[in-house]
Amino acid sequence: MSLDDQVLEKIWTEGGKAHVQRVAKLMNIGFDYARSILYSLGRRDFIDIGRDEIAVLTDKGKERLEKEKEKQFIPSASEVEKAAMDRRKKPYLEKE
Image (cartoon, rainbow, N blue to C red; front, side, top):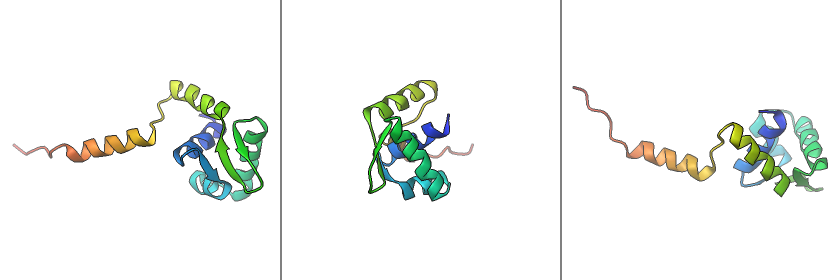
């Protein structure tokens, strides 16, 4: 998965919208590096980013994520939450 796809995924997990500072923190990269990646994604219409530096996924960005999901499974937030609930409901295995 490319760095651009990872950034798009992080924005997706934040609800489709994230500030440059939040993306930098989630990616564990510097603020200026995150900004340059986001502005590059914006120039290619994968996100909309304005003067407030909040990145919002566009339809084109969502389509790119869908294509990436076909290659590699990226669970949605609800799928992650459901899996966690299922793990909590399973009884502990008893020792024989």
